[in-house]
Amino acid sequence: MKIIAFIIATFIVFSSLIFLRYRIVYTKKISGESELKYKMIDIGKNDFLRYSFESMFRKKRVYLKNKLENIEWIYIGEKDFNTLYPESPLKMKEKNYTIKFKFETKYLVFGGTAFTKITSFEKIDHSPEVVKS
Image 1: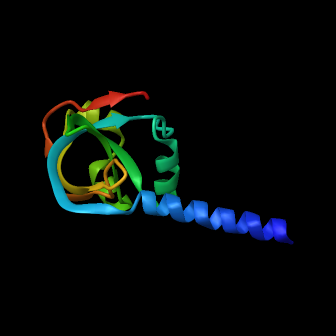
Image 2: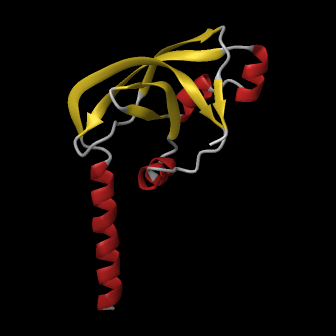
């Protein structure tokens, strides 16, 4: 019985630490503008723990075409994801358009960026950058 209680307590402490790691932010907002880099296969490479954590809360990772202040990707909600991915990137490439968007985020205390909000977006006549992985 003590072993089960120890395992449960360890799990709760570990989960709490991960939650705090990815939710404690600085107050300064960061604004940016970029186009998307469409990755066809994203398995959470380079940040598997964060990718798994955000997936539990239905957040998706999108890659920025132009790195901003060492920000290579951001995590957005499902609604924003659907606006940035109106259809398959391959169909977008055939139709020769991509999405340019503005966003706001904050830095995390322990490194990285917090959950990002898309403030505006527009379709532009430009072939999207589509990569396999």
